[in-house]
Length: 460
Ligand SMILES: NC(=O)c1ccc[n+]([C@@H]2O[C@H](COP(=O)([O-])OP(=O)(O)OC[C@H]3O[C@@H](n4cnc5c(N)ncnc54)[C@H](O)[C@@H]3O)[C@@H](O)[C@H]2O)c1
Image (cartoon, rainbow, N blue to C red; front, side, top):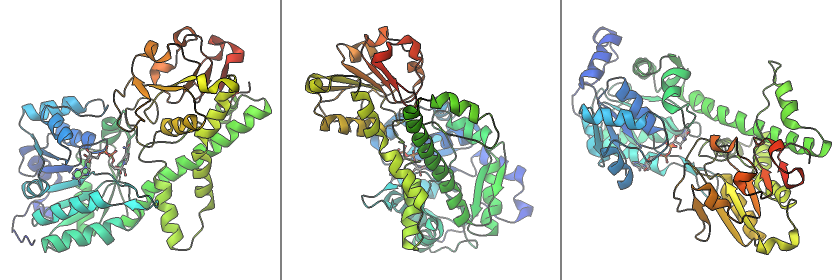
């Protein structure tokens, strides 16, 4: 479908597009923002634009997400989002659309925030991005600007998204419309603060004009300003580097933690002392690396590297080390109970969120721990999480509850998986005196019976 509307939403011409003029048009609703995908990234991003006074169209294909948003709510745990949504609805600046084409026709700045996960063969699943780009392209008008926000393999914006936009709209990049890449730099649980206060926004453009307009726009929400990148491919890679750095360094921490256990050394004490020196940033070890980001981005690099014949051995090795942690922790935890009685054993897992403070369960290590326990044929598995109240991905025979006393009733073993704040001060009594394996090294061992307690990175 071709769309050759003459509407000029934004012009790169500095004379009629000063920063103040752009800000005015954003606040007046003359220039509307559409956020595609109201999830962990899209909800806080839409909130930040609403908080900046913009008129925002929230777009999603999930009836549940749309229904919640229409009530001023989000299905995720993210401080500040419900308030921003409710205020936006009240002031009639927040509209919710299920129709992605109409959202494109009615908006000028379109932010693509749908997920890019992994296919079974570990390549990037770009189906949602392509679907949304097609609808945006069909509704694209002259002067519009499109921003791709998910983390993607290098080349995705220019080789995949841009051709769809040009083909579907019949418009030409830099001449008729603009495109930027802005990787989201958020830590779930404090996403709005991250977007608005904590880091500069990374912006790269499909050309000089796209970069100029994109940088001006993102400056309206990012108080730390904008880092303008030389090209989109570098910006796409920058975001993957952030994730790969963390994955590889968590793998290093996991290896050192395992070494310390055997060497009779408290890893956590050694880590704290080592990190007091400015060149040392040893990460935290744990039962596993989950979430839609850190375990996924290394695979984007590995997949691209394989195609270009480059070996990225450290990245690949780090992934394997981290993937092996759930099995390692289950093995250590099992040492706390009588192995001949495993089939009579009820194991309680504390935490389903992929880490503390989040309700996001994507690629949570808890699932892998469950798989390992099932291989051992334990009698019963229960999961406790203060933030996750339902989860269709758990096996049907695994109980999920936010009631700790219900979870630990008659438990034979407790494994701490997620470092939720609620767990930090937990005591032996709260866990009914069951043996405890602390897979995050957060519990105070003096509160537990020594021979019934073990912790990752600490000698028995
Ligand atoms: N979660 C994070 O902390 C984080 C941080 C940085 C970057 N990212 C990147 O952002 C991307 C999005 O992640 P997320 O965590 O927000 O995902 P999410 O699953 O929480 O949210 C995605 C939303 O998009 C909607 N959606 C899916 N397909 C759609 C379609 N075709 N049309 C309209 N809506 C659709 C879903 O219903 C959902 O509400 C990730 O793939 C990742 O690359 C995530």
